[in-house]
Image (cartoon, rainbow, N blue to C red; front, side, top):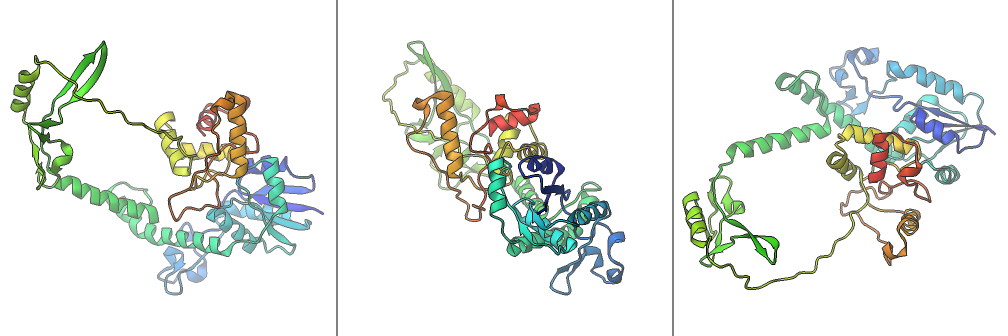
Length: 396
């Protein structure tokens, strides 16, 4: 029995091919194979007379989308149709997110297979994960497909109306969609707040002191029993102290006079307060926190981070990199604890496993957090990666 497995990228196809028996053929769809018309010339002839045709969405009839195979994907579709001939089974193994589910659905619509078809999902590319996924296939999730379709239509409806405004007001060639339209609104609101902001000034006093050759900093907090004003005491709309705040506002002359008055006087520590501080390790990465940390520590932009993470995922080094969940599987926790014990010893191992939960109600808990793939974590020193991949994997 021969099986055709379709994944999204050639890199992923090469990796998965090594984990499947010889009677499995693995091909790549190269991303989406069907989409809304990318240009006016690709709108089907029968729709060109409609006033909504340029949108690619029938706004007069339930927002029905028009799907076409782009010119650059016709060859890929033909190759996949040819690969389907003579096989006994089709397995759609695109990513497990909305986009991946949609790609599988479009492949099903285009290829029209006459053989049994399964949907295979996995969040890491390891021999164990692929074997487990091939044994636990499911049907296409129509709800996920509709969710992606809705987002795509919203992108088109917003983008085709907002983008021309960006071309006119900012720069030619910029594109916008459902996310950018909200971002533009946030920027406009923030700019209006900035324009309305009234600045104010205040002075404070700080001293560097020393006790038994140990330096420490001190800051003037109260004067005559009244709190000294800081930036948080100002009203941003007036530039003056906010109404109801009982504070002392020092100007430069008052601050200088106060400094001269106390500079040569004896300094006394009246009391010392000690507080216990508990530090917790940071939760594992989600997509957004990975991007933030990569930018902060590695000076990598969001696009470069996601491209690098995609390569790590497709080569089987990390789990799926698009997730908003901090949840870890039992396998991941066991692998992490084993790695800590092996590298640092039991004295550095926490008595109990630590499990994080996602605060956001809308988080997709079906996905794990981003972590090293597999039942055993590979250390960066044992892998074959380029510099950017190595640095990002080390962070993860």
